[in-house]
Length: 182
Image (spheres, rainbow, N blue to C red):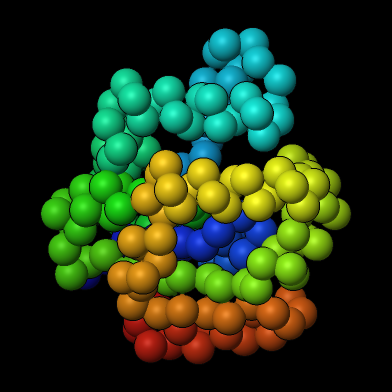
């Protein structure tokens, strides 16, 4: 039975790196943030932290706090017919509940944790959407307080500590995949 593997964590923790590792293993990846990016394009807004936050919050106001999960279920179901599916960026507690209700035991949550000082350093050097320390801290607070991001992290089936190098991360991901049976 194919599984839905959702990667959760705060900005800069390594969700996209883990998704890249899984993509190289030929697993399809659905990035929930694509909804935000597509909405920015549709509205003709520049891609930056301020506009992304506005769009994320407006999408949730329009469709509810489980919006990103609800809007991606058709895509997940289509891919799930023939493969395990990776979700990059499950955010809210409500999205978690939508996916848990839809997929139950087929849903596997992998949290990636990186200490804030290291995440902020990484975010400041990121090629796409770099953040200052202040912006990163504000995003953390917003995601925890307004988007209920802590719930899915707390409910993770597996937690990967990402405070080393890329080889360490790959090794940790491979260990978790063995435990999942992939």
